[in-house]
Amino acid sequence: MEAKYEFGFIGTGHMGGALLRGIAQTVPADEIILSDGIPSKAQFFADELDCETGTNDDAAQAKYIVLGVKPQMLRDMLKGIYPTLSARQDRYVLISMAAGVSMDTIRSMLGLDCPVIRIMPNTAAEVGQAVIMLAHDSRVQTDEAEYVKKVLSRCGMVDEVPEHLIDAGSAVSGCGPAFVYMMIEALSDGAVACGLPRDKAMTYAAQTLKGAAILYMESGKHPGTLKDDVCSPAGSTIQGVRVLEERGMRGACIDAVIAAYEKTKELGKG
Image (tube, rainbow, N blue to C red; front, side, top):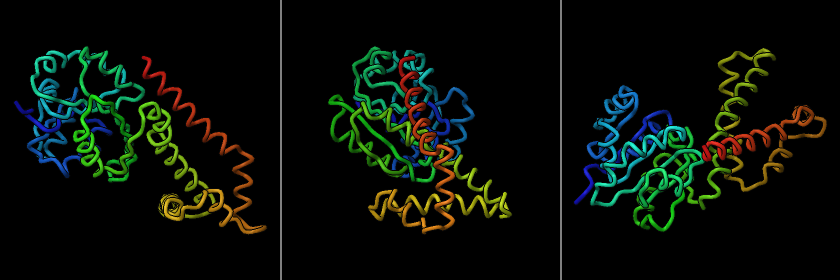
């Protein structure tokens, strides 16, 4: 007996929708079914991608079931689809992106010893530039894990890691985009204060961050070395660096990541 669908999405919010757009580039639309607590959200993506919509139980009939709900909602959702999953005679794999919730916890909540792949993407999946951490254990077959990695690769970089690293990684890659957007906004505010028009200030700030990131990744140089390359003796840049050090930029960034990590662990316990 084969699964009715290849992919079933339970939850089509910002993150689920971003992944869905990437996966739909590889998986035929008629093999994807969508479900959401707000049906209009699922219908929006169904209309865009020509997928089907249905209930959580319908989505739970897929081979790969993507759990796109918040950690606080996960237990009740899993209890709801338990009868459908427990009655299945074919093989299925759960794919969870719930922050802080381990694979063992998901199985415990569900009450079934089923294969689970845990992923942690970020919102850049929408433009194919995400960081997607992925973990699984021996319950997941090698060909299943490789297939999921291949499908997700349309959304960005997929990096398989031990599960215990996912929470720390998500504090950087999952929460980090918000920190970066704040920096883009702050840099552009500074430029506007100096007289640059807002539209140019935003574009320059965003492109500067993008270019600096690409240069770091392609040059192989340490970021401190690249920073030194920009700082001429008695120049403008080193004065800006001095102010950032005085205002505690490094410490603030470190503390932000640690705070995000601690909250992720707290969500998992809840």
